[in-house]
Image (cartoon, rainbow, N blue to C red; front, side, top):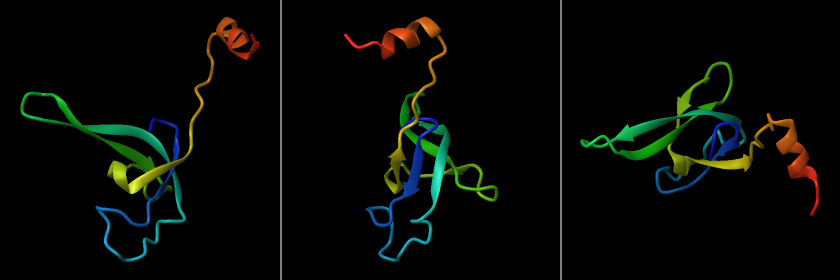
Length: 89
């Protein structure tokens, strides 16, 4: 998972109940991550922040409750490198 990926809610899983999730048909985009740190300042968990719609624009989700449905492809900012990456060898 990375910023820009499209995600959807996983209907069932270890952190969900057995009820049907009404968000299962919604698609959101990852706009960032929240890091949880332990007492020593080491990262223990990264939770994605998802933009679902204008009402829920920065929802922190558990990683196991969302799945990637479309991967963001980084835009090439160096024209020389873009040309190299599109040429076949």
